[in-house]
Image 1 (cartoon, rainbow, N blue to C red):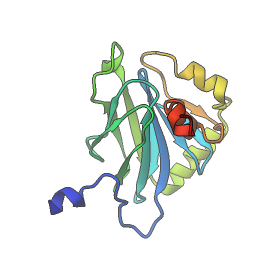
Image 2 (cartoon, helix red, strand yellow; image 1 turned 180 degrees about the vertical axis):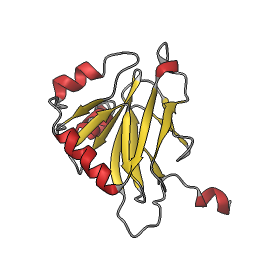
Image 3 (cartoon, one colour; image 1 turned 90 degrees about the horizontal axis):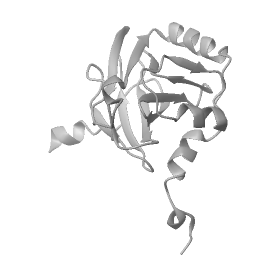
Image 4 (cartoon, rainbow, N blue to C red; image 1 turned 180 degrees about the horizontal axis):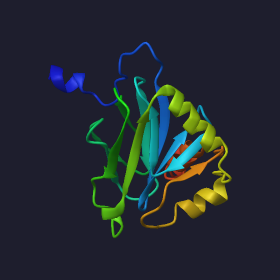
Length: 181
């Protein structure tokens, strides 16, 4: 019981550094990572600074998926209309593999992403590169990205539509969530 509660994926990792918030959206058959504080996003690449806790908010814009980075964190489900949480921390720089471990259709076997754990200075440089990307993640761009596709290359977005993550969750809420009878 004690060990189970110690490993609660929602519990923040104790640190003198504030967690980096990343919003994660599972799609057919790729992963979208939104960095709300930095105002950038990436497809199939999760860049994180070492030594700083990472606080993930996870949802799905398709069927249920399972977010898993075996070398850094446990597994947790991503479900449409819901948000789950996962905390992780990379102690040292490196490249790690993350993937969906819940069968989700024809492109499931190709639904993986890279995690780049880097020094804080390298992370800041990554954010600066992302801010220079020509693509912006607005509603039309997101709609195109959300279409089924396989083996998506890494893509960076220099700006993200406000509240995009929340809008993805809300579209599955239905009329009862908005006070309708």
